[in-house]
Each structure stands twice: as structure tokens, then as C-alpha cells.
Length: 224
Image 1: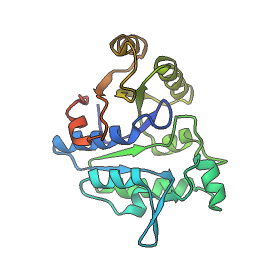
Image 2: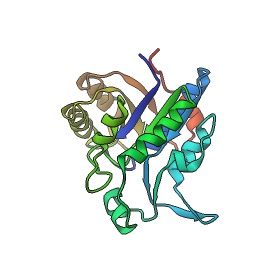
Image 3: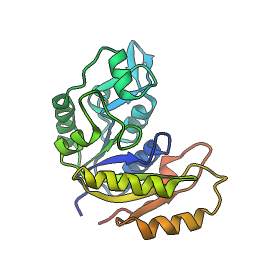
């Protein structure tokens, strides 16, 4: 399987897409690949030296080698911590698909692999006229799904996988991320997910008070 680029989505917001994406970058770099991240749209930013910067996008930049310039990695940095469609409207912006495609092409030209991190869950729109599926189609990417292990994860994972397939796109793997240390029957839930999801599990990331993408990378088993 080619690992030239893929899109990381999740079963919800706050389930570990960024720690999974940065762990993927570290795992790819450990294989000797030039791996860079991309966060096409990020909402919830702070002013840094007069420029809007997003914490997740900065984490991707730090995990990338060679490190891309911020504006290419995150073409749309939306100030308000809201759903992107609402944040874009409040910022008076219309997100352009061609802008995102061109930024991806610049990253792809200087890397062996580009890890593109989405927003929220799969069905969260980017703006009023642009869904994440539209971007993934335009970039011709397979999808990796992050499953946040907590109550309801089996339902959320199966619905997300079904939605990706219904959009005509391929989910090539999933990562289990322990987001709730108090979750009951974790192993049993993992076993159900392994039986019910048709794509392979790329690994499981244990719960950590302070996520460590380097340690998380050691838990991943990427396909050859």
C-alpha cells in the first residue's frame, strides 16, 4: 500500500485526531520518510506575532520534517473556536477548494507523505458549500479513521465508516485512541470494533494526561 498521503478523520471532535496525526508523522519519519502534516481548516486560533495560529496545526508543523511554512500547512486559520462553517462565516471568509488543493500540492512536492488532518467528525462541514468529502475527493486521498474509545464508540465508528463509504471514499485503516480512562470493558469494545470494522487497525494509543506523539508512534503498525 502506498503511503504517499492520506486524510485523518475522527468519530467525533476531541477524540485525538491531532495526537494520532502527529504520531503518524513520527512513525513515518522513523521509516526514513519525509513526512509533513497539513491542517487545511482550523478553527480556534490565537494571535502570535500578529498572525492567527492554531494549536493543532502548530503541533503538526513541529512533527513534520521538513517543516512546512505555516500558511501552507494551514491555509485557513479561523479565529473563533466554533464549527468551521460558523467560524468561517464569522470571519467573513468563503473557503476555496482550489486554495486547499494548491497548498496540498506544494506540500506533496517536498515530502514523501502528507498527513492531512480533518476537522471534527467526518460529517462536519468545512463551510456552507464545502464538505470534507469534497476536499478528500479533490485530493484523491484514502481515509484513516481515529476512533475515540469511550461509551458509544462502536456505534460512532460504524456510522463514520459507513458514511465514508457512502461518499464513495475508501477508509484504509483505523486507530484506537483511549480518551476515557474510566471506560468500562475497553478490551471487549476493542474486540467488537475489530470484528465489525472491515479495515485493519493500525494501532491503539493509550490514555495519557499529556499526549506524547513520539511514544504514541511506537504503538502504531503502519502497512508496508
